[in-house]
Image (tube, rainbow, N blue to C red; front, side, top):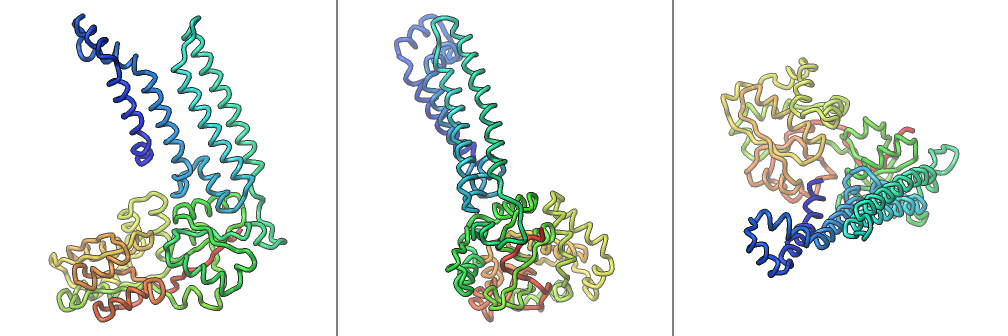
Length: 417
């Protein structure tokens, strides 16, 4: 919303400024000669005379705002843009055309309404203006109804287990950001399993857009194949099943690991002891991630987990001495599991009186900060595949304490419809 406002507002500001400055100077002098104040000149003279230019600016702002509809859908925003993006991702020309026409029609109606304010009639100008606006609003209502009907007709059919999956989804895999390592692996997979020859393709999007598309498909019981990974809340929420990968294109034996800077165990043996103790399972982490995804504050979700698992917490903190305010900085990447896990470990350290802090970093920066000693530890290193290049790059500059979660996985996934 904020990005749309920032993107769309400049034309109105610029055109208003231009319209006011184009008011003839002799009219300004007349207003001054009658003793008009600056406010009176603005309201009763400059703005009315600049009305045409100002309305043109407002018109352009509305068009620019509307242009963000499809762009916003790429990060999961709902609306007509979602219909367009969903159709493009599925190569569904019919649904894409219907949604695209709807966007165009909305643009035309908004354009006509704003242009109406610039037209006056010699007889009953205000009445004519009201009639025109009412007519456009009636047109908008009809168009919205027609769009809803067309969109419903263009809705993809539900999954049919008796038919091949490919034709039902136009041989399209819904992916995430084009630069993600998982996307590169998926391209390799299409070649290794000879899926390219069968017309299969990967459609890049964003993580938010992929999850939004997945959510819609599950809700409507429609088939879909996505690039998935776990641990992640979507696996549990949508009952995702990973497809077999006998050639191990996505790697094998992936796990989440705890890494620290060199020398941390000597500098802070108590905190290191807790990091060595910490390990959990995907089934334990899912409720925390789902609560955070559902809108619960991350700290509240973690506190709830700690309250519900006293025996596990006791095992994690066994043998960990009082920290007496010793500092330790944990770093993590901006993903749901990483946020939940790091918040949990940070909270446990704080309960043992360590001055623990956490900082979100890009994955490359995270590894670099541990290697150069500016950060102390991370409990979210995904190895040996996903972050394997960083592990090799900084080999000998960090300490790997342990695997803290087994069963991490990336690959193609489908919902259990």
